[in-house]
Image (cartoon, rainbow, N blue to C red; front, side, top):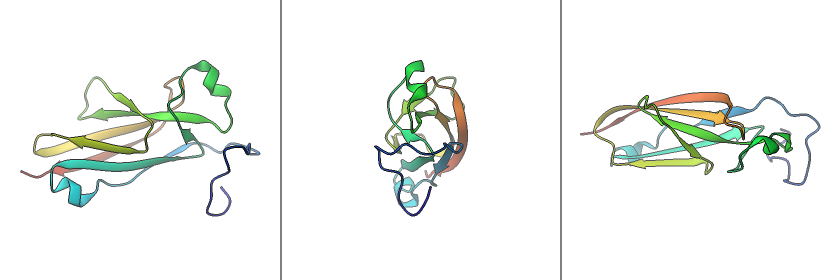
Length: 118
C-alpha cells in the first residue's frame, strides 16, 4: 500500500503482495457485559462473500474468514469485518480466525483468547 488509502476499487494493483490477516483484541468494555466484539481486516485482500474457483482470478484478490470457537469441529464464514458473539458461558474462550481464499484455502490465521467474567 502507498499512503493512507487503499487502492480504489477500479484500480488494478501492479503486483499483489501476500495477503495478511489483522485482528484487534476484543473490546474490553463489551467483554465485561459478556459480549465479544472483535474487529478484523485483511491487508492485500478484499473481504467479500464471493466463493468458488472462478473468483480466484479476481484482481485485487478477494476472500473471507473462517471462525472457529473453542476448538469446535465446525466453523462459520464471515465477510463483515466485525465479529459479535453473545451468550458464551463465563470463563476462558479461544477464537481461531482464518483468512481464506474463495475456495476456502487458508492463507493466514490468528488466535484470540479472552475471558468472559462470571
